[in-house]
Length: 584
Image (cartoon, rainbow, N blue to C red; front, top):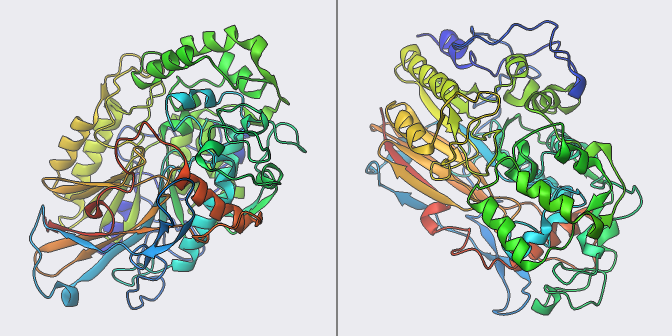
């Protein structure tokens, strides 16, 4: 098949232009769009950003490979061995060659041809720390309920964007990076305000990371409660007992306006459970109790230990997917709640509102329009799509979040069948075409089979079924995801599953991924981790945007995590790697 037709196929199923798409959450569903067909939509060759075809490698010049700005060169390391530890530059992490799926042949460095190079962000968890629906009081049960660094997610995300903007070229091949993919949990609590902050950070513009009272912070960090780090007090809270410092002016600085340059690369978006579900685990709804509570004036900040234990057990085991027990808990503690300033911007968003926000011209940035989502996604409410990574390389973004609730993932039968059709058509379109799949959940965390309320008779399918489908198509090279907040790379017979650590928890990383043809019957996937552009060493008196981003890293390193069995950095073989594959 000639290059034109191959490219037409690769853009066919979703990443096409949506000229004339309406703006924001008020988008009209009735003008200028046709209903999405059950099969892959017809092809289009629309250019999605200023003269540069999205996903194509080679629009900028390749340069000599360099470890600069990556964890191959240096990675943050702690000073000292006990108590609250400061960070500093440490030695880099070496690249590990993995031959699990194919043997490496000598001389491939000179023969190889770069097919694709891009970056992955995952689990940014941009969070409105003053949101009434947050369950920080479950910190006694899990480190993910509340983190000392959470108020600084905006400057931290901007620092990660700045790192990629400065890097531009891939470290293993020197090829220009062509895009960034976010693999979900871009936001924390299904809030329109958080979604706006995320889209603005990625596309560029000013962000005021504050809600409720426009002039004051109203959250757990000035509550006086010992469960949380009280940065502007001498109160001996649980974190100060571990050596956490007093930082005067912290809360005022945390809600001060920040500015993002936006990515200077195109970027695509994949949805996660925290994006769609209140708390990341309760059935989605833009009406009802949770919606009213989210925009209201009461916030629960403390809970008796035995009640916290029961609530966390229900979340962890998926016992309350619709949130009925959680609603009752909030109702029963209403008199004990803190009064906060109501804010309609905290309202939850629906699947269609999520897509509409991505289509909003205000958030186009470097493109493409919709960041993978199209008018077809808007009209049907389907959050899966395809896009062209590079000529001959297809990208597939899946939606593994069940609107019925539960933090664990799955896909419905209609999406699974769509995936099967898309993979078959890719094989027919060109025998040399390759596919890389993106999702939020890992194969191991797709174990929730709760029905989707919008399709109660449709079966849900777990990660094992998705993995078997991917393995049955030799052109599928990798499944790239997040969710677990841990670096882990797993071989699956014919493909690699690449799971990347989050940017909310230490070690706060993103990945550069490069695909090469080695000219000897093998392919290589290079994975290289990067840290943000924030300084390794934080200055507790520097409350500038950059200083806060550095403090974010230090606080995250020191955050207590008693429920974690092993480091989220993973093993060396899960970090900077060359992953060999047999060429299909």
